[in-house]
Length: 599
Image (cartoon, rainbow, N blue to C red; front, side, top):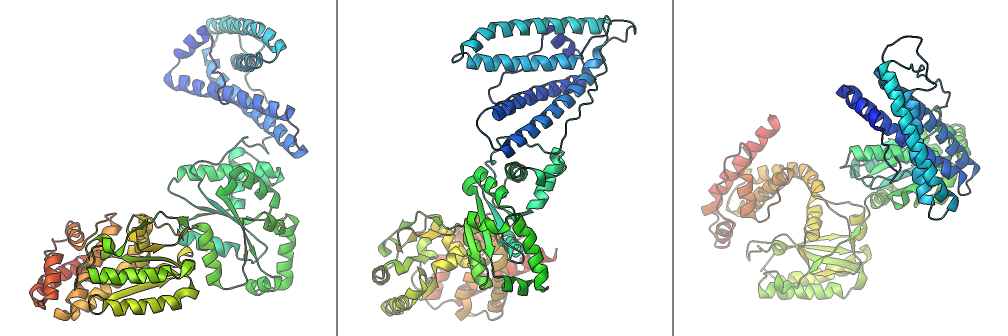
């Protein structure tokens, strides 16, 4: 039924008779009649559309084909309704009068009359003829309901026979699809890859699938699925608009069934007209990516003769494949390096977003006065470099509020254009000099392009996530766009990072001594933090991290001294006093970890 259309109300005698049916038959009949009324509403709307605004010949043809399919569905539903309604008839004698139509035919006429009354009442406010027609239509409905009730009574009593319900209509089912289709709210983002032969469409879609978690589809597959679902013989014979509706319908179905999927790719776009229609339907949720490369480059990549590539190009160009470039949101020259291609694809698939960053002065991070002063001088220096330096932040313990003098490092993140890195080096040298022996400085320098291309180590991804969650920054340029890092991404990053941390921890354990205590303890905490991420637990601070890890299934409690005790012993030159419990905890974790992977 169309939006706000009236429900179909059956006359009382028929309603009572239907209510007496077995549950299975009654539910089947209710569903069939409801669908029949819905189809009649769609038919009315489609016929209005084809008679209304000026349409192209292709759109008129599509409407006519849709009317054919709806009429075919209408007749099929009427036949199904008659399969149940026919069971109401008393076997009776063969010589009782034969009625001219089946019960479902009368119900179908009642449905159409209900729609006619509703549309006439809506038009009555502006159309005098429609206003005068409304009372007569209500009279017709009363007469039809009375006649239907009388017919039901006669049929049930055996006083009247019904004709064979089969209608043998010959409506074609080769070319219809629902009208007014819109993108599902769960269909968030689709990348459509176009280009000529051997331009890199499939390779690009595969890269986006593996690195961004996209669901990958071939356009031909989607159209074949839609054709099978709609009973179409050849979806390629339809107008571009209808093909676009079929594609969107299939994407909607998958998105609604897989609500966690954020990104889809479709390939290969060879028809400029249908992809233009799909763009009109989807707007910016569809991003068209056209991959371009010279003929010579494409021949070299193909490993075949130039004639073979040219023949495939000719077929694609006959469908408008080369015209897709004029419609594309992104045109990529795919004759350069793989690194450049993949960087561009990552920016398209996961564009950077403006992040509301929390600024703080070094004096608000809990640093000693001398360190805070040196940090403030460094911040002033890089800020003076202008837009070349996009961000500076202290990561780790200063951002988490648990920096400890004589124990913690100063982990510094600087995002700067490559051309500004030399000046950042100068500022870092001055920073180190000002820090002296009070703290060790560990800078991470990265360019904006590396970030937006998501060339990220797991550690860098975690720092970016911390900034998104409100960890303070020392300096951020206006309009800075950063890649959005989800907890899910960090959990997968933990899977990749943890093996290296475990290997390093084993090496440090083999050389365990007072001089390696600090590194051994930090790797123990890092390994536990990564394990917790895999279990969707997001603790901060070494003491809380170790306590949470101690609750892992099958792991004995890690009885390590507190961070304050360990750092104090380290600063006082008494590392051997806390070394034993740290190595015991490391051994416990390594034993447990090995058992988990051997199970």
